[in-house]
Length: 76
Image (tube, rainbow, N blue to C red):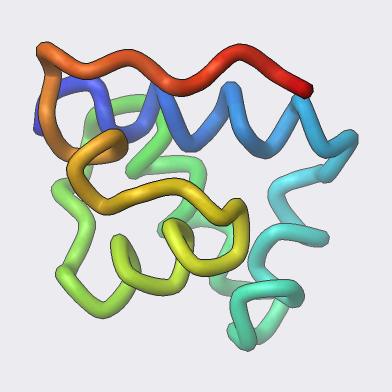
């Protein structure tokens, strides 16, 4: 779970999204970007509903996001 933020940042940048765009895509107000930034930088632990939304948006498994021993698939 320590690498969740790093993995989320990787997925976000692979898709050419800003933090604000990610917040909107996940259904949050753009002001939610401070939470996303804190998660990406390891300052906050994500809540389970947030993890589920990120996994669904980027079409990856929750295991890939939360298990530090698993890597993200290479971009297609």
